Image 1 (spheres, helix red, strand yellow):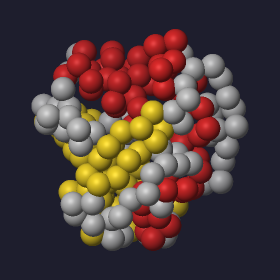
Image 2: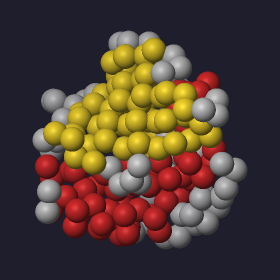
Image 3: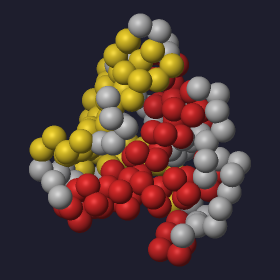
Image 4: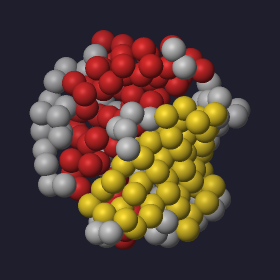
Length: 178
């Protein structure tokens, strides 16, 4: 299993991670605002189809290792909020939602969880991504999933921005040749 996401169709990238279980614990890090806020973004979510919710991102708070926000992301320095809609929820195995419900044709994110011994296989698939957003989105998910893995393993993650900058550049190289 490679840490790097794989393009599985036009505009679609998939990531797989093996995380410490049990499955209910990993599920809680997807749907509970406080836990999700430790690796992705806060926002109260009702895990049922049709429910709308906000995600508020504060990348600098995902690690005690704080570095300056890169200049091109300064507008997000004090947080950024986006609106989403749950498409499917089958606790504790599947969660799918729009990525920015306000877009004319929002992309879609699906988390699938499957027990694997005492671990949980998380499969994240992001569909309907415009070509010009693939590297940035892939780098973001890769970084957020690395932080989730660290949090679940009890490790202190590196700064989001330190990890993201190198990862996004690598996805730019990888996706340019695919």
